[in-house]
Length: 311
Image 1 (cartoon, rainbow, N blue to C red):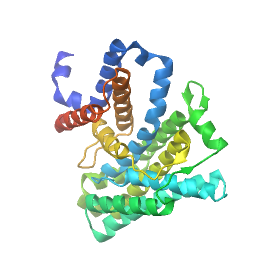
Image 2: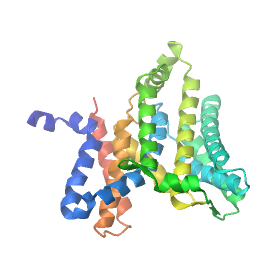
Image 3: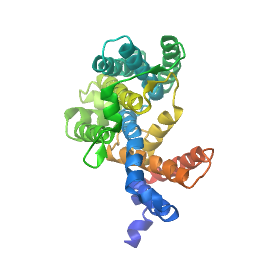
């Protein structure tokens, strides 16, 4: 056991799990309310959106890419949902168009990256700016209220011990795990991220794989946008940059290689839970919100350093 604990690769592979357990113990002792059923349920609800976004980011990072437009896509998806619903087309059509819009953004990102052979960082950074402008134009810079019984039930309803958003996140984790580890697409995805030239030589259509990965990221942004609108009751034309930064952080904490070829779904999901638990615990301890990004950043840098020892 002692040899295992001294092995750096152990900490690299289990960083998110060890970190989450450590936070639960520390915050549970420092503030017993942290372990209350009500707080744990609230924590899981708060983590649901980040879990879904981290799944989308994982598929992209697995191809050795990154999606910087993720938070902007969530914003645009929310705006589309709000405007379509306000126009009288119904909440279900609004949700479908929301997901289609964000999926189209992901598809466009992948297409430009592969066809134009432009670095993903540049393309998604440009898309981030363009989507932000488009969202402001469509919304006029004003939030759109969304009154919907369906979204209200989605946000506040529950089945068993968990709220509906948590079940949506669980379903997303299961579906993504199956896609990554039990389908040909998953094999091709990891092969493309590991060595794109070798994957191409084996007959894998690497460009299509990359486009699919970015489209999945956009799809996850659409689902997250629906949950976000359901939670706050309106479509806000503002980008929550913490969603982008924390989605990348969760991927790093989850042991996904930033160089591609190595990925996990459960790891980033636990990483998302860990980041949410960190913010929740600091809030309960009355730590200023100014220090919370500092704590998140320190943990991410530490995790990135530990990742060097991955086997």
